[in-house]
Each structure stands twice: as structure tokens, then as C-alpha cells.
Length: 294
Ligand code: UTP
Image 1 (cartoon, helix red, strand yellow):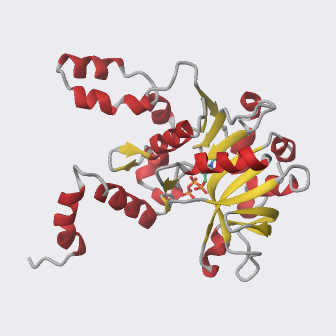
Image 2 (cartoon, rainbow, N blue to C red):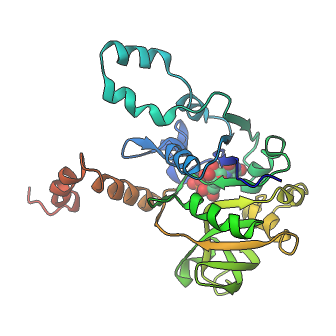
Image 3 (cartoon, rainbow, N blue to C red):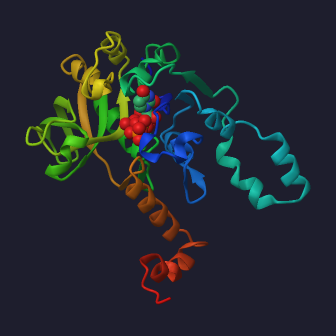
């Protein structure tokens, strides 16, 4: 077993139905936050945590993601001939070490658990990370790096959690906590999208996982869970007792970019924080709010 998280899985094969029609021909993960697609932020966060290999679970219509992380020969040559140095520099985050990316097709969108299971051959028998690119976390030290700190201490499975209002727990995978020091809580149980009033806590999982390879054994049965999908939460729940399992409250602001309002909020927040755009965006606020008289 390695003492480092070397591989990350990005499940990007979902239908993105909440963003139709935009996602009819553009993968949700390619929607930009200011000028970088969501998937770029996810890769950057994994890199910051020391990850070396990036596994994308893709599906039909997701080719733009593969192209994004490829060498764009014509574009780069043209920019170089025109001495567009800034534009060329902007492409730097799209360069992955040769051989450091794998793309696996999930032939049918059978659920997040199934998407992760599709990575089993490439992961093999080592711990790995999962990042859902539509959950964006803004912090100097990325969420996955914070989780890796906890993993170095505890090992086993680690999930990132945030406290959500009681009336929203039905939208999330919820943790039943055991011993809790206020930052890291032992996980005693997990339930995906609990019916209103039945959630064991308000600690919701937020799209970041560090998992022991034992989870593949539990995913193998292909049992359907909430929403008729193969749920990662159900498979993780079955590993409780076999491997240490902890939830980490991370530092940073979370934007649910799978939701339209969350996505727009992320664009505003990231735009406002940018020196080159923020001041102009503030000038435009009255117009955005519709305060201006015509
Ligand atoms: P979501 O529940 O956000 O689904 O999936 P979605 O398809 O992306 O979006 P909506 O709900 O239809 O608008 C959570 C994550 O799991 C991936 C998605 O790409 C997303 O990153 N996923 C989901 C898969 O890779 N395969 C699946 O079968 C389901």
C-alpha cells in the first residue's frame, strides 16, 4: 500500500440534465467559472494535493474534456507566431505530464458508484481520491490537500463534509458521526438522500473522497440505490468497520456548480476576486441588480 494518494478519479459522465440545453453539446464540466472550465479547477486542486495521475470517467459527448487536456498544436503555434505570450501562458494549466491522464468510458450513466467502479483496473490495489468537478471549493489550501492531511493521520476512507440546513439534508449523502473533535468526525453510518426528518445529522458529503480500494469489492454487486442509480454512498457504507472511516470539515467556501444559482454565484465570487475583472464587475452591479432607470 502506498503512503501517498497518487491517483484521482473525476467522474464526468453524468448527463448534466439541470443545465440543459447548454449541456446538450458541452459537457457540464467544461462550463467556465470566469475563464477556466470547472474541470480545470478540479485538476488544479488534485495537483496541489500531490496527485500524479488523473483518471477521467467520461461518456458520450464528453470529447471536449479530452481535447482540453491535449496539446493544441495549431492554436499554440499561431499564438506563438503572433507573440501572444499572455494567451499562451493561460494554457499552462491544461498541460498534463505525458501519460499522466487516462480516459475511461462509462458506457451508460448508471450512477456515481458505477462511474468510480469503471476506474478499478487503472487504480488497482491502492488508495485513491475522487473529486466531483461541479462541487467547487475555494481556499488557499485546496480541499483535497486538507483531506490528505487527515488521511496521513487516520488512513482508510475520508470524506469531505459541510454542515447544511436541516431542510436540505434530503439532497445529500449524510454522515452519522461518532467521536467528533469538531474538525474530524468518525463515520458510523452513511445514508444517501434521506427522507425529510430522518437524517442522522446535518453533515453532508460534498464531492471529495479519499478511498481505500476495498470499495471496489462493495461496488461489484451493482446494487441500485437512491434514484435507481448505483450509489457510491451505499458501497462506502459497507466498508464501515472494515477500514477506518472519517469525515473532515474543510476550510473554504463551497459552490454547488451543478445548480444554476450556485454556478452563477461561483462566477460572481471568482470574478469579484480577480484584480482584472472585480472592479469593473462592481461598477456593473447596479445594472446586474436592475437598479438602473431606463
Ligand atoms: P450529478 O448527480 O451531479 O449528475 O452527478 P449529473 O448528470 O452530472 O447532473 P444532473 O443532476 O443531471 O444535472 C454527480 C457527479 O457524478 C458524475 C457526474 O458527471 C457528476 O460529476 N456521474 C454521475 C457519472 O460520472 N456517471 C453517472 O452515471 C452519474
